[in-house]
Length: 441
Image (tube, rainbow, N blue to C red; front, side, top):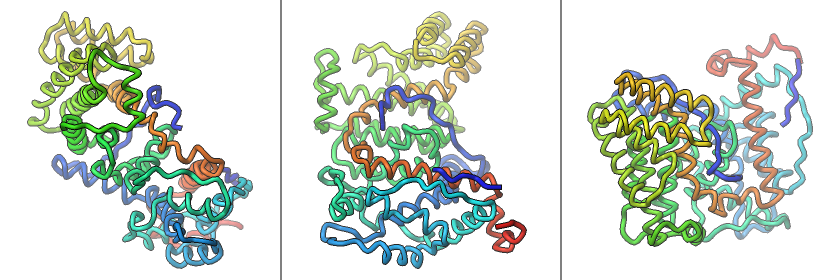
């Protein structure tokens, strides 16, 4: 059998359902240690290793501001030696035609045996790069920028102070606007260190983004930490904003608040709400007790702004259900249920929540209200609306070369997914090369 190998972020405000991840390992480990263990399991997995290898194959090219010519043949030989690439990965990780803006999908086919060979090569590369940190090399964007200059292509324009965290966050946000890439997003966000970002708005929104990723992976303690960072950063005096953030806030001016005050109240309220939902779902009585206070703090900030939206109604519903105020809870749930942005499935969940409030079963009502689809979708959309204005997040979409790079990354994911369909990756390493003998060329 043969399989054909084929192989922006438009507006995060209208992003649809966020994929829900998470593994079931380490159930006996307490709290934060369990979260960290599960996260480590994902970040050391084969899918992430494959992605990490692809990025190292570019970032290790030794192309910088002083480079005059690029010897791609020498680079290929070096990568084969350093990354232990076999014939398939060596071809897949060959970036010459893309950097020269000459890449065209060639429609090459993989046989079943070749997919198995490819999988074995991923294992071999995984051993070779186990101790490598991609961030010891120049950033991905810097390599593309300098190679474009050398090859006389239109270069991507790097913002001043470009660093590793900006590079990783760029990838995470691009992936967020596309289906798939699950653990690749988690890997990229793990490499983002908000303190390395230049201004308050970047630091707050990056912390929110990390928290949302933890939340959808059901790492409630890690989510608690990230949302706490966002709350702390948003509440600091002397907030600094990027020009595009300031412009957006001026256009959507609320009351007499300054752009800084408005940004603080909006992002802090969302952070409080999401931290409250994280704490509500954590297996910790201590955190559970703090959840209500967080949601009440979110409502206080929402009311200061004078806004009425889905997040306000979610927060009010939660507080009224917790306080067993049946009349107000049903009123808030009805407002939420009438939102034009809800799906039929979400309306059914809210109808069930209202029914349980009527039956004086607040626990069941809260389970429906805190359904991860609803809170993640609205929480993410409002939290990340500012990110859609960050121009450097669209660096790879501004040139034909960048667009082909993005297309290539989609192909990388597709190759891996096709290989998974042919074999059990977990058993392949033990089976070794003898596993291939039963497969025809």
